[in-house]
Image (cartoon, rainbow, N blue to C red; front, top):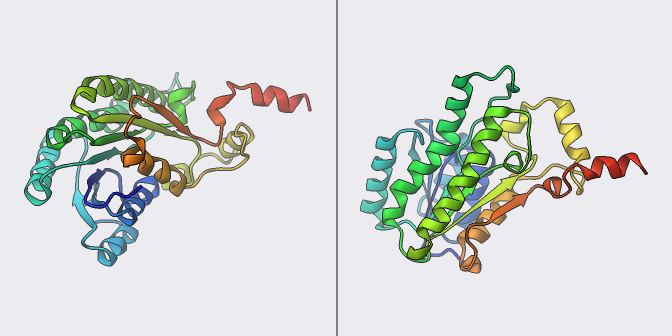
Amino acid sequence: MDMTGKTVVVTGANGGQGLAETLMLASAGAKVIATDSSAEPSPDLEEAVKTNPVRILYRQLDVTRPEAWSGLASFVRDGHGSVDGLVNNAGITRRSRLLDATPADLVAVSEVNVTGALLGMQACVPLMGSGASIVNVGSVAALSGHYPVAYTASKWALRGLTIAAANELGGQGIRVNSVHPGFIETPMTAGANPAFREATIAETPLGRTGTPEEVAAVVLFLLSPMATFVTGVDLPVDGGQSSHGGAKSISDALR
């Protein structure tokens, strides 16, 4: 999975999955434009930039703003000429349930999780040639009826956006896929209710949570020359959580 000479944009790169994706892509030889909403990189990402300034560059990016994406596209065009990969990893959640969720909840989450991905593709695709690859980071919530309604709705929408993009861009030789992590140990999941963690592990056939590196490895595969005939795919990275439709609880109860 050699990415030498490839330029890849990663959003939400300050921590968790985005940081792991950045580090793994750089290790595979890619030049990574690591972006996040803060003016400065996180301490971990800053250390990575200092250690490998040729392979990792940090840029502030608000994924919800078209003008911010235009600025990033100009930066990449002037400095690197083209984009070979885009990882729409940036995401937020609000955990309100159906009867408590507000329209503002849906808008705020969708702006980052869906609009951000749309704007990213609109900005980067003109800089892509045949063989380029886009990976949208969804969630196991996009494969189920997860209770945080704004988050779940946004991730289902991202699935639709991914499939539409795969069909739209296939003629240009650009591949578009999505990965759907289960419970991954990230800053976002650190604030989850302990009961949620316990119940999720009980529904996961592998019986544990995942790591950011396990998601990053799948993202790297989809961006790499190893996946040149893979597009329009929803790929769970969830330890089997989405595989059984609730049958695991029934099976376990009958042991």
